[in-house]
Image: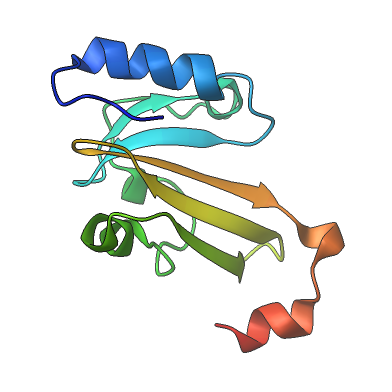
Length: 120
């Protein structure tokens, strides 16, 4: 999803909604300052809204790779086990400008927990 720097925030949000609105896992569009700009339907069902910092959401944020994605300009992946024993396959994907797509898929049923814990 390449975004021209000339696109307005509304156009960026519209593009996000078209691409990620129905994705079957929570997805958010954030700035590199961690401001939530848009969320997909799943996140809306969880009560997550725009205008807050993603770091204010429940959960452990020590595995956040937003800074790494910003510095490299490339997508970053991290597989980690959350405090609730769910294993997430997380992604931080930079899009042109100040924006980043962040999501994590629950891969618990497919994960080798010993390998996941060894990679922490």
